[in-house]
Amino acid sequence: MINFKFPDVGEGIHEGQILKWNYNVGDEVEEGATLCVVETDKVNAEMPAPEDGILKKKGAEVGETIHVGDILAVIDDGEDSEESESSDEAPEDDEDDENVPEEKKSDENASVVGSIESSDEVLPASDEHKTSKSSSQSKSKTLATPVARKLAKDLGVNIDTIDGSGPSGRVMKEDIQSAAGKEGKKAPAKSASTSTMERPSMPKIPEEGTRREKISKIRKSTVKAMDTSNKLIPATTIMDEIDVSELAKFRREQKGLAKDQDAKLTFLPLIIKAIILTLKDYPKFNGSFDHETEEIVYKNFINIGIAVDTPDGLIVPNIKQADQKSIFELSREVDRLAKAARERTIQLSELQNTTFSITNYGAFGSKLGTPIINHPEVAILGMGVIEKKPVVKDDEIVAREIFPVSLTIDHRIIDGGDGGRFLVQLKKYLQNPMLLLLS
Image 1 (spheres, rainbow, N blue to C red):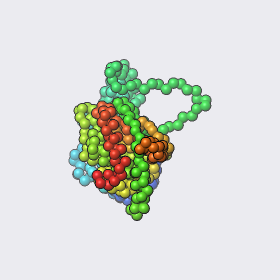
Image 2 (image 1 turned 90 degrees about the vertical axis):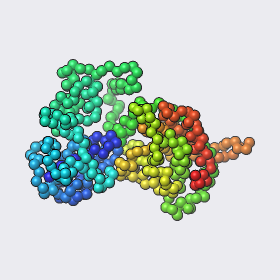
Image 3 (image 1 turned 180 degrees about the vertical axis):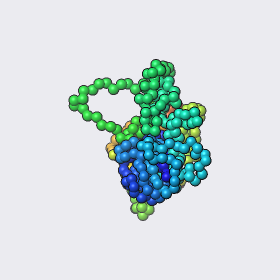
Image 4 (image 1 turned 90 degrees about the horizontal axis):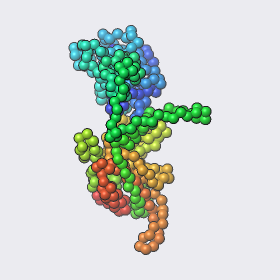
């Protein structure tokens, strides 16, 4: 019997919601076949069966939430198991698992994630599901979400002393609040120097003439990311305009060649190429800042994140090793990632380890904006719409194609002078398109 658990895939994903089951209890399943689809705040993850067998139990039904480490499905693979299925509760980990053969432990305590990263990668389930409070298991971690743990810390409550009322003994927020009330403990006072702010309560609004709508999981992820960026990063934005008339001419001349290469030569891959070259000249912009160690982390790889507007919210996949790709390869990769993001088939690995992001609000006709940095990155480039404008050139007023840009920087480690020099260098590459091929 295999207990197939919802895996810890990283990136702050702690839970998901069942969107679809492809099998019913009692159905035969084949190894690698998609059991169900789980919606997370990052991706819609297809959960493949780890072995051939019969689906004996579902850990959650469509619409229900499942947490990392919870039993997603129980599959009868024909081998005996000492774990009983008579209880409605999900089976707990065997205390004596050190006596179980390694191969068997791998089957029972690991989950294979197919469409998230790769079909043959085994990801261990989180240890947060170990709930026993007995002395023999005193080293096991209490089952609780990060939100509950933070609440317990804020209220000064020892979460390991609480008997959880949730599934499998999970400690819920209500349990912590109840314990805090009994112990008469209050959240510790925060010093005036703290960088965090208490969220104001929502003022009472008349229900008449209003409606409420739950935000999507992607929107929740965006809220968290924007909160983090706003609290941690003292950001400033530098704006400029770049004459890209020569770049526009170069693009028109090379459209035929791009078609032969099965690529669309829009402005975007050309701009990305210019950004890559500029990041090589100013590597600090491709790094991150470790606030705890007070170190700048320089990265020897360039993964360009592209903000994609989808019906569910903003998703930012990234082009891996972008500096190793040609302009045509960048074009094809932009199209592929944008399509996957909109269709919610993007893989988690394609959202991880972005080093520098761009956002193109010019696609909707906007000119300038102040984009927000995607922590832990230290800069982001906003791109406005390219349009013809009258400019003075050689003492004459002529029509030129002008590209407005906005560079938001982390002012802790990047000064305004650095930002200005970055834009000057970017301007050099965009105004001389042959440099994109020769550099």
